[in-house]
Amino acid sequence: MPEFLNETEDALIKALASAGRTRLSQNKIERYLVRIKNIKGSNFEHKIFFKKILALINSSKPLIEEFAVKSFITVAEAAVWKRKGFQNISKIYGISSEVSGIYELANRRNAYFKNIRIGKIKAINATVKEGDTQIIIKEFDALSENAVFEFKFYLSLKKLYEQVVGLRGRRISHFKILSLPEFSHIRNLVYFGENDSGHVIKAALDFVQKDSLFDCITIGSAGSISIKFKIKEFESFIFDKATLEHACAEEVSPRYVRKKIYRRIRRGFLSNKQAKNARKHLFKKITQIPEGEHFDVIIGVSNPSAKDMIFAKKILDERAKNAGIDMAASAKIETLAATKQLKKAVKINSEILSAA
Image (cartoon, rainbow, N blue to C red; front, side):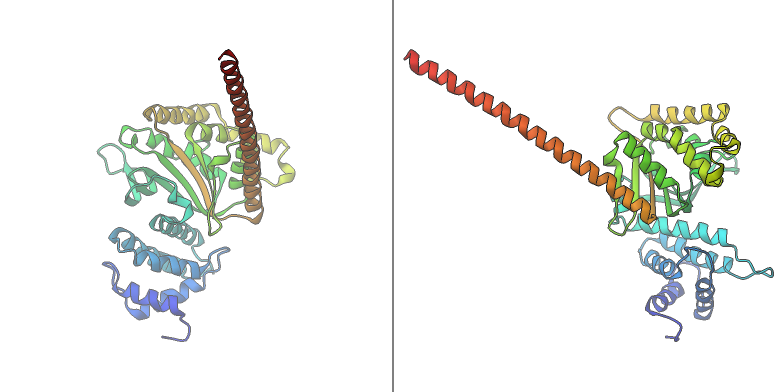
């Protein structure tokens, strides 16, 4: 084993050399490893990336194995320094987010996905075409029997509004596609990020605390946070004034939030036509759900900020405290009821004895 390689990297070389239909020489793989290790992007950890690629190759699932090999090659090629000294960092982030998302899916014992009905993974980078044509109108990062997935390196409310909901964007939204008859069976939409831009999880937790939706928060053993909304709760969340303020704060400096630029951005998110169309697609999806079933939107992040983790734990502690008070009150009521029943029984028994 060359001196610059650690145990994981050595195992990755062996796995890549024999994986899938793409055969790479050991020398080429080692060059690719060096390239990836030299990526300068903030929050990109090559050690974690290598670990996840290795796990996906060893998953014994051809679809996932092929995806892992292609992702490794794509990131290595994007990491080549250009003449002007720039790497294709957006491409690197995009592939890295997909690798993280598929890794979570493949390891469903992880807390993030273990409580979600996902079903078998049917496709990675699944495309939706217009009618019988070959024109691609939408791409899902992953598609399973019961869910669609959108993976991001950095979560943002802007992308949630534009790509998923269909506000202030020219792209066809996830919900517009999910309202089509061929997707009527889908019951989950997952918006998953490796990191958070600083507003998504905070906005979701603010809404959860305000509306007392305590049961929807999950904190994973590895430090992830996820928030699960029923579709009507999600609709309330995205059109909530506080959520819109968080979305505006993503795009402007906090000192401008209360000025004209803030009002202009807010109007951009809520133009009448787009808001009407977004609500229409959400309503159509709601009407597709049979009685007794539900559709959930899950928002989560692998590496939340320390502030968001403290906030999430605080909300859960409040819930536990309130649940304890409720249980105590319930126990007191049951005790009083039992005491009344006992007194009533003693009185009846006394009357029977005196009559005798």
